[in-house]
Length: 300
Length: 290
Image 1 (cartoon, each protein chain N blue to C red):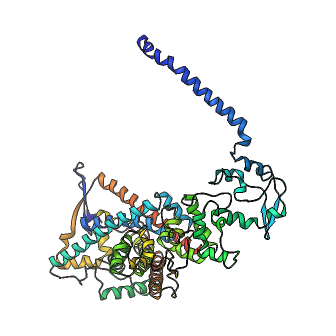
Image 2 (image 1 turned 180 degrees about the vertical axis):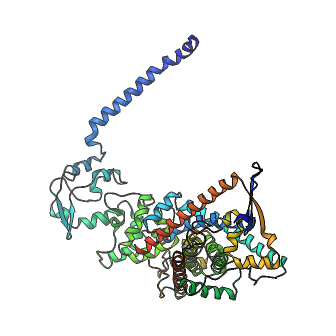
Image 3 (image 1 turned 45 degrees about the horizontal axis):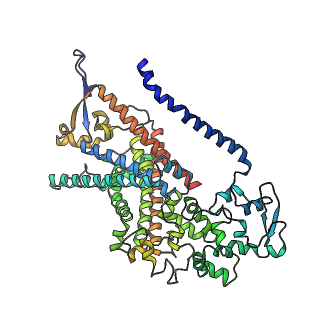
């Protein structure tokens, strides 16, 4: 007993300072957390200025291009997003504190959701400008075609390779391309995606993100010229035949492929025939078995 | 009944024995066991993909560890399938060669013959109360259908499965649309096979039909009481008596505590398979009406 007490004595002497330090740290953190709690969101000074009005306590709305939008911003989500440390005026260019004048708010939606992005993301913007979606917006003045914020959102921007973004991408595309979304989900990639596979290919992996172009455009990722290379990103060694696999084929539509449709139809008829015959045979057998009192009879 | 049980009451220490009819040898039983295990795994790892947008597909996938793990199990079961298929075909060829081709279309064969057509008509007549139930030889027509559809179906589902497992190799020799066709065939052949095994033919013939209800253990035990077999397959019995080959299939089975343990095991096996089959069938019926 004595020996053990002696042996542990030096160790015990070193322990209290460590413990005190730890307790002091915990106390400091606790006090810090308690006092800082109301302003725990570390917004930039500029953004804090905006947050004075645009917070959860402000239930006001504003009408923009016929759309009613809330004045309140989810500051917590914004702070957690990739842009969380930026000033609001980085995107809401020209806005000043105090009630915003008409001059400031004129066309701000287009500016904030599209043009402002170029200041930092020039490369992506250039790709987008000449893409199918960009052409619709810039050349044809479409208000339906997606701009940056339609896919990336405004205040909740996350990394495009994050599981969160990849999970949501199909819904984004399906807003306009619903039918393609359905056929995608019927393909192996789509089935795996729906059942939780994070790795499997979804829309942008084949079609691209900012650079989306129609199949007929030679520069498109899915054009005859580029499709093999696009498949080979995940399937090294892909050849022309491999790239000829039709991801968006609907087997139940003879206009997509008459051959595949014939196989589908043949199986539907075969299954119907076998199950009907099997069902009738089974039901009749049970019926006769009961009627003749065969159930429960000793077999031997 | 008494004739089949040879008890020796004056020597109580000796185990009870019973003369039984050997219907399935060890090879048959092993084949069935491998089909049983691999088929169940294939169904549970594959069907959620076919019905991917249902709630239960998510439950099943979560229960087996996700879609990637399911893919691995599916491929392991596929390899077992190839192995048992090759073993079965080898066994058939060896049997045919050994018998010098005799009896391939005979009454004791798995091959369809004219009597099967008469039996189908006879069974339907019996169903409607117009005549006695037909007498069967070694295999009934639904057993032949069960077996043949498995042997041929495995070729179809296996070929298309391997095409999708090795898409790069497949498209070296065939156009890309073959992968679209492969998926349609694989997926529908799977539903067909599942319906045949789990509902309409196999589980019915082994558990639900009056002669077998609630469980026909013979594929596990190999043999069954002679009187029982004589009643179920009178033509084979009569044929063996006539040909003098009955002795070849009569075995003396010792009834010990191990027999009862094994019985519990077979019942457990069957209960698990039965519940699984009912569950998957219910899931699919739910999807159809959802």
